Amino acid sequence: MLLPITDEVLPTLIDVAAAGVHDPDRMPFSYPWTDASADTLPTNFVQYHWGTRTRWSTDAWALDLAVEYDGEIVGTQGFTTHDYLVTRTGETGSWLGLAHHGRGIGTRMRQAICAFAFDHLDAEEITSAAFADNPASLAVSRKVGYRADGRQRLSRRGEAAINQRLVLDPDDFVRGEPITVHGVAEFRAFIGLDQQNAANAE
Image: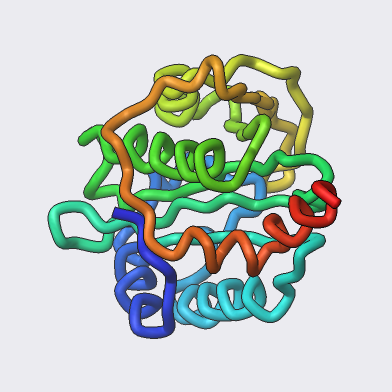
């Protein structure tokens, strides 16, 4: 289940992140937020999520959702975009508590956010990325139907690393279990989709 990240959910997510998201010797993220100390991670974490709320606009927004599995909060799944009303594309990003790796949760939560974007937000493509030495993330992308879309050399912990770009089209999407979504009409209105469709129909 994907849920809004409210202030009530944030402390639980902080506990999950503090318990570990990946092997400390590896860094799967282009921004190494998990390198924060135990003293600073909670503050950094809430500031990021509060910041995404305050910066939200129809031109640029980040939908971050908490992942609940078997009644337990285990990570987050996001969809970030710029100029969505024009491009109809966004990028998926996620993390999962280390204790919950290897259970198929990563695939299911990615399938859920992609189904939401394609079926309810009129997305025309979805992008993602993973470092070449992150086979688990790349495997999830392949299972969901993403294809390779070029590579980048990025700085990671002060060293160069190869980042694999990925793209997913609706026809290639490998669906999981059917999803039920609440609040679709309100969310579409919030990001300006229905207003744009009405204007185009005039």
